[in-house]
Length: 328
Image (cartoon, rainbow, N blue to C red; front, side):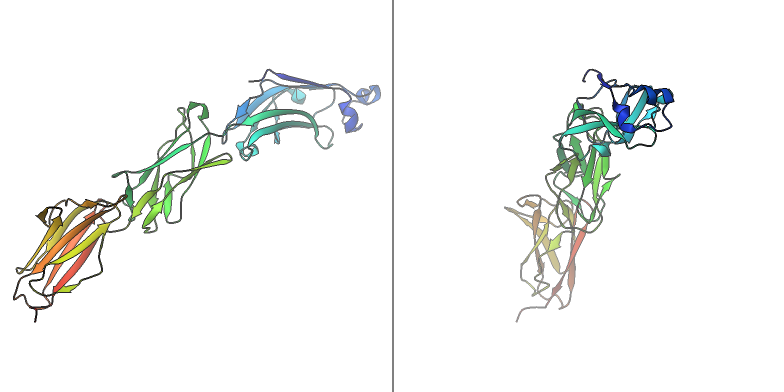
């Protein structure tokens, strides 16, 4: 912190004129002296934090307004002999680097006149922004059942700094888009949920002062999907069906006729289509399953089997496969 700053202004009141609000003796005797001081001028301020200053002001003239940092100070004793000001962060949030802390004073209805300027550095944190799923680190469900956790960290020196979070359309930040770094220089818990049935990679941008930082994207995944074909097969034909998710599988099941069968095809093994499947990981977050379905010879045409797979957020896809009868 700077030492107290002291300013003595002679002939200042001459610039204000000789309005009737000034004592007659002041006007007759010539310009009055003015002494102004700020108790402590901060070396730096942080975005989103209120700046509270106190100090003294002595003048033979009646002081009508004291403006510090563009904010009206409150006199805590007669004629602003002592004063206090609470400067909101909007006065300096948009500043990059040096902010000019100006002090102006007015008497007798005259326009405020500049009497002091201090250089204050606006310190913007280097934010670390992370976005992770609450069940699995790589994705959340598009159905809104899960949430991604937003974490911010900037170090203890930035405790109290305000951070604004921005998320894409179709998502919502809970509890809100404005947060404050705590005493450890980190954020309280914020979450990102899907509100628009997205199926995409999304990120969150955190802004503090003049700087913005983006989190590594996370996948918002819709329900698993079967490949488009086939939907009807001949009896005795072993049909591979591919089902994919951009997230992670939780379970698969089959509602089969007496004359049908369905198994998972995995590297080197077949497994019944039930319970939690062992899926094949794809690049990134996704997984794929290969289901082999067969209708036995003699199965009546139009007989169906129903195959279903769900992800870890309860999003389910279903494929109805029909028999087209015996071939030939």
